[in-house]
Length: 423
Image 1 (tube, rainbow, N blue to C red):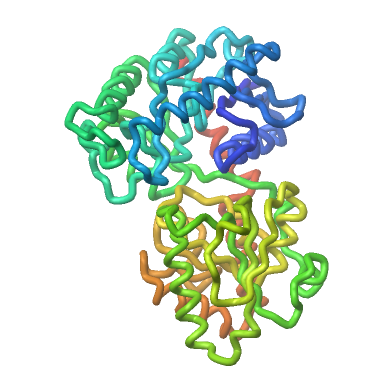
Image 2: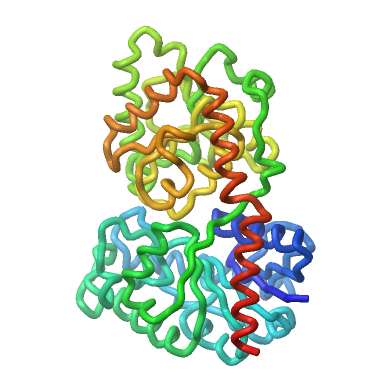
């Protein structure tokens, strides 16, 4: 039986962690010996392993994660764009599950987990390595979100995120460390979105590396459609109102989440609908303190963090449309989960969102960074004459392209091809 080990920094904390665990579950359903091992384990799932054998090792791991992030502030400008320095790291090659695996599958390995030297060390095992890029960090000099910066096409340096930017700044030094490591380790890249695949092909660090595009998956038996009125009643939403749902709501300063565009588009929509504004409500879920949120032009309800997938699925199903104003996202799970629950999505034409949202079929793709176009999308869905059809198409688009069986089999085809090559 094929043995696969997945390595990720956390167990389900963040989109990459969820993607890793969901892929593992999909592979287990195909009778594959698949395991997840993490750098730092928050949960209590006994099926997920970690590298910390005792309390002291776990404490040290937590300390390095915190220290790396605190020290980073000395060198970074006061921007909200995530950046990793990789000062700390750990060896993984002596763990029995890693040593016994036929395939080593890397996922998100930042926060003092696998720095370049420890990535290179994996080559000593002589095993096929697959690496899913959940953001841009693997092929940049440190940033996780690039926006319009093209320095990764060269050798980084003069990084706009660093206080002391220069041709030989930290971003260039990190690029050099990664380049040295990647020369020593051969790995197959998986890009979850077409946008990510195109980005990797532009990267100077990834020249000569093999790359394929395979999306993430999700449990479609959990994220499923429900009767709208029933779901609204269960969630306590007003049955007579059109409910716009949105995820984690940052402040105006968190650039890549696009909050300012959402606010502007809602203000435009309110002017367009006039007296019917009372028939519209915005519902927001996420972990932002409600004292630190913008003022919205429509009645807004904050649900706080939803940790239970079944409740989250019911929340998606209860909404009439989902709003995602992100300016850069690989393959955002909120979009996939919402569509799977039969709820159409409005988002910008950016990142991996167009891989999931088909314009005027299961949602609306707004012109990038255009609040006017985003408002057009909201108005289009409000006035759509056959909402049940739109909802059915949303669900079917996920079943046809992102279901567990489909994504597991695509990974298995890749794994088997790599194992044959090494035999």
